[in-house]
Amino acid sequence: MGVTDLIAVIVAVTAGSPRILTIANATALPSGSFEPGHRTLQAGLRSWVQRQTHQPLGYVEQLYTFADSDRGPDATARVISVSYLGLTREAPVTGQDAGWQSWYTYLPWEDHRTAPPAIIADLIAPQLETWANTPARRARAAITFGLHGHAWNEELVLQRYELLYETGLVPERHRRHTETSPQGREHPTLPGAFMALDHRRILATGIARLRTKIKYRPVFFELMPESFTLLQLQHTVEAIAGRRLHKQNFRRLIDSQNLVEETGAMACDTGGRPAKLFRFRGEVEAERAISGTKLPLLRN
Figure 1 (spheres, rainbow, N blue to C red):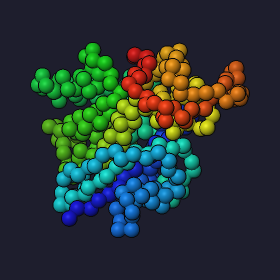
Figure 2: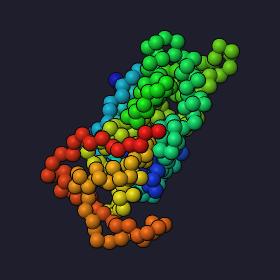
Figure 3: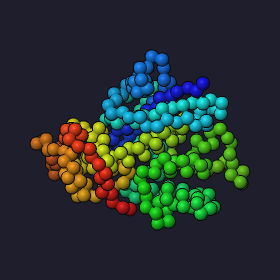
Figure 4: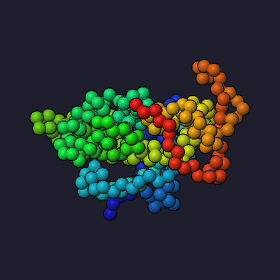
């Protein structure tokens, strides 16, 4: 009988950096087995996160269930993992070598806020060109990584990780096998911090879900303090999307959706002119669903 693990992708955004809660010296996500004393799966997850990190959790939703036969450390162990996505504000954590890390530490090819990362043109694209020896493979590589005139799609986080896994460019692919290149050398892998088991794949799944979700539901307010400037809000959304937003269009979007209201106070620590402070109109969710608004992205 398989073991059921509960795994948490806990996200915060601090000073414009998308942060992920980790344990085991930044090599794993908070996780633990579903135990008889846990009333529900989510209650068990919250118990493990509290026990391992002492980070309080707010918004949590079920992410995905992973049951691949090769997920565990050996081929004979069938491990079933129920993953959850949680949104919170960063707080000091303790226990089990817990800490907060930028999620771009693990997936550096995903940060396009300034420009397409050099890792794509310098390392990923040449390797994919070698791998893509059929029209179907060439099309898949081009669409997934925005090559050969295809636009970058920030939502394809999981597809990009799985393509890199399939082509052997992430070390997780070689966990059980000593694979070498035709020249007899070790297979090259990309920069990006390694994670235990398939936790980096689960992280990619969580990022993809969140990047999709912020386009139809304003869950990014779960990441904000009680009051904030519109620029801070924009930087938070940009951190998640990994893309720049058009400033004026973003502000018109927020205004048209009637998502925020002024607090009457000003922020003076902006490095420039004082800026108005806003808060989220919590009653928006009760009034109507936020639907189908595309982020005003600046195309690279």
